[in-house]
Length: 397
Image 1: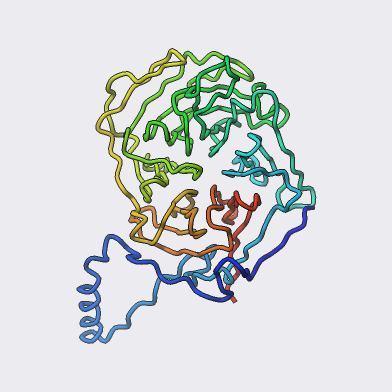
Image 2: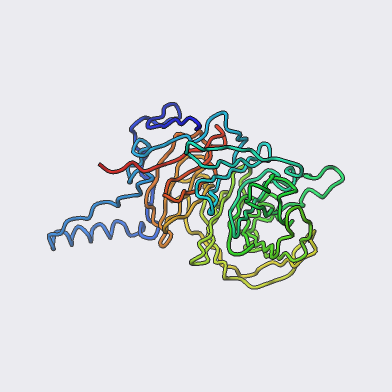
């Protein structure tokens, strides 16, 4: 089993042990404008009715129960310098194998898979093979889908198939098998690919073989439907369908992923709109089909969507954010990682209320992808130190 180094105190990154982060401004954007009026009313009611003012929210155990103190949670590095990671950008648990963690590496365009995570039988394997430089070119994000598949998206607009190969903007999401008997992280294990989103920054699964992509080149949110995949190592893309939403309404920040999460109950898509310092929300049921979009390298149906409803779910400036990047959703809570501040925030998905936050001992610019394990632990990648970390709640005494 790999060695583990649990951190209950970290020095040297401007975080003093036991110190608390200052409360960010406007912890509830829907009520702050009337805060003074509401407080006066509450005080008057308390005096007239002899009631007790309710205690502050309890916060989330995995973030320290509103202590805003990393010492109040168990922070653990789950990998070390011997783990084959190279500028990791995103992580995701395989939903069919809850102890299997997948990590995409931008540095060497590879995939690292940890099986039996944190067990005596833990095994770490790095996958890279012929074609990785195209099918997994500079990966920025991954998302698991249906029936043992997953998809990646890539932050590149450069040649990926040699000087006489496909053009610079011939990029988009790749569909993969998650069967490790077949997976090689290259041409042989890719199951499909479509090509209309160079500089892709985030990806989220919707249903069947449908994925949403944060398209940094076109500043849009783009829906990709692979329909029937072409099988391992194939090349038939003719049944794909691409729909470009909200063009010009989101903004890429170079080298900082803009990850996304789909709430399949409400059909709302949440995107870390890093360049605009916000969490954008797209109603994926909105919009009407418009004109065709180009280039059309795959010879398929590609359309712009008009009148789609994209709004600001979280204005990052109201909470002191600078560069929202990693996202995760569980039990009605949206977790947001700020790449500049190394801080994780938690918001109520129903009303956008800030539930908790905590700053972590991670070098600014390092924290990227997030995911939650089946038992509620929060995992993430530090791209600077090239390690995976875990946050785990400390039981209350």
